[in-house]
Image (cartoon, rainbow, N blue to C red):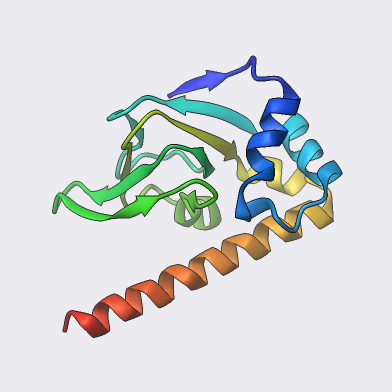
Length: 152
């Protein structure tokens, strides 16, 4: 995973403006988030974003590319995280080690947010991030429930 330091703010704004995750954010809120509280990383194809049991506690929002999530112990593909979706919320929220592994299916750019950065964000931005995490987790629960019902 490589820190990306030289993407102009205007280009970063263009990327996140296209993503559903940020639809409720004003332009100013998007700019504050990008300038002060997050980092962009490039994860090359087939490289790990993180591995099961890592202590990395960041929340990652996929900006481009795709991340495959799986369990090492079972080598079971648990799904793909697409642009505008997030990964790592379990370790981020509960301050625990990673329960899955995540590897880039193609060259992927992610926006990383630490729990410490989240606490320093203006309240309105922090609440919008929390709302999106709750919505995303709710969608995942609904998908898992449907999967379980269809595969008894």
